[in-house]
Length: 152
Image (cartoon, rainbow, N blue to C red; front, side):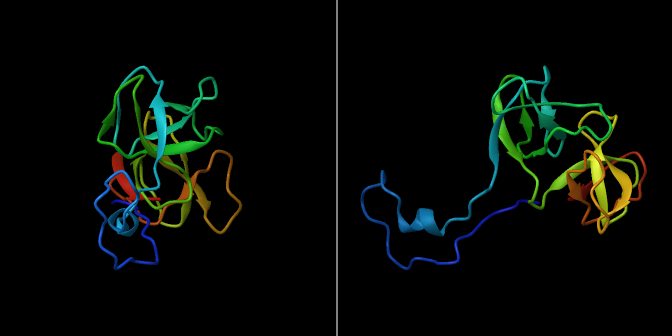
């Protein structure tokens, strides 16, 4: 799943000859609302892994094995992001696929799990106040047990 923004106004003008300027085709293109963050976890992370803000480094993230980690969570969007390398992550508030551990009920809040890179069902329905460490609501379900993915 790819989340994209598209401008509501579509320009009918043709691009000018100067490629160093913003052109109508740039304006018309879809844009990804990703954040550029550096992986400080010590290992490569994978697409759709759940990571948390590294409060010791600017614009960085770490892996976590803390259930309901209260730090801001992000979802990795690149295929992989090597350690000490910047890459694209998605912040809260956007629909994206996320790696999960265990069954997830659609409509429940998600929290970080004790399995690195995975979210888990908090057991709290999304119409209730968010539990500690919640970062999104599952908009799809997973019933396969073990490792899977849902949309959040």
